[in-house]
Length: 324
Image (cartoon, rainbow, N blue to C red):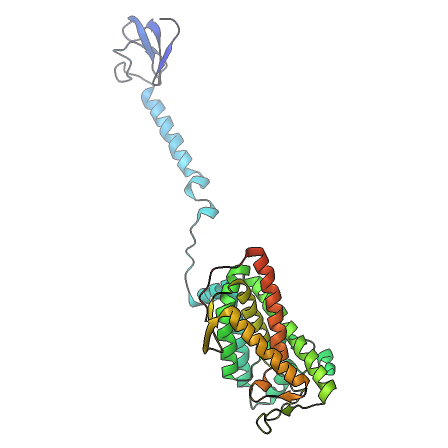
């Protein structure tokens, strides 16, 4: 046989055995490097003098490898996160991942502050600083009230109705566009609603002076055309309108009472607000509903419809979603 054959870890060819001198197919010892026949090929059969030394060297190399820093310590990116779960961490997680809830919480906090200040010397200052007054001079001197009005409310029911409605419609919208875009939309539509309120109130002032007549004499109370406004209704209605464009077949309760498809509720609500504005433009208001800031509501609704249609063109109408 010419050449050699590799068998396992031994090189095989014809040579003289270093132990017995026999000429045969030989094997090379991996420790001492000498040639041996098949009978003496194992280290213990030829009393290999290098075996113990080589084994010790291999052991030292193995031990030194495990002593290395990168072997003893896992990479930082592989460390599991065992951060302790506390109520502070949970609140931080909720507020940073659920912007709908964050808006509701902040608005509720502002209402608590507003309520706590009632009867104190700071109440008038707080109210005058943040409430929306439609007179052009007030808007020019306090333009921030176009936004701050969204975080004040006229009572617990006003706050409850707005925030519950926003929760049901803000949640699916946030899932579609993301939390940060929801905040931008909410603030933007709120500003648009405030501007709509200011514009219409100044038109009414030019047409009818500082007051309107009640369509049912004595039933409306007093309503000054330049009276201040509070509430987030414009932004909330914009959110409702945007969702109605994307989930038109979902079921809702209009005013928490009347069950209908959301697109029907949108038309019914919008139609009612148009009627209220037309009545005011001709000089009349109606009991109860006449105190609504219909111009702000309608402005918010139009912004929501416009934004919802843009979303619908991009993602199409969606399956029904469980709303209020």
